[in-house]
Image (tube, rainbow, N blue to C red; front, top):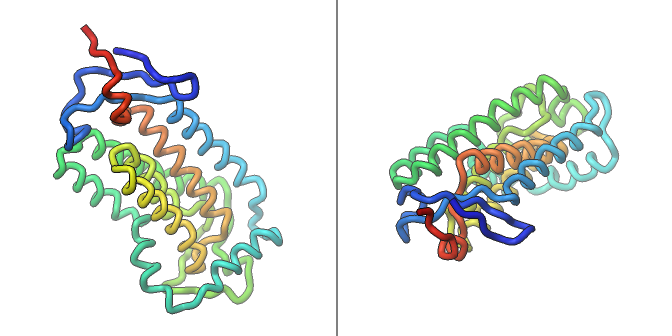
Length: 237
């Protein structure tokens, strides 16, 4: 085992990793980085902070204004928005896991399944602790695009699942694909406000939960090191 990197990102590199961690180049070292720990802690802090202004009877002027801005986008956008929004659906978790298994990315498959399910059930737990309804219970004249969402609104499970999967997949993707994944996760968050299913703090809290779950899973399972780090890592004797 070797330790490498600067003070801003020290990583612990384990040897003897399976080839499924990098299907293109064979073996890549598996690391657990200080950045993963920071990402996990950041998600927890944002989640906690996002709960503070939440009130089941009142809505701040700022959150109301942000909601109305995105919810006022034209109705003809709904169909393409709906398609992308499904990336936050819980059904995507087993589908993404299966795709990783078929690609023989076993560590990625385990990470996707764990992060996705942790986020999904974590969102249900948060909804029991921080109770707030859907936008229509606090805002007049909500534009409902598609089927109306029911139940409690804080936090958004769609936002959480999309962010968690993007965080887990990020190190496995190429330079361009990883930012596409981040952009799609952000799009899902905005989409949930547009369709009238969630208020802005709902998706902020959901995204924070997904952030914590994704980085937490990366700490537990590890992730492929950047190729430059893999090349510098010294093998254990």
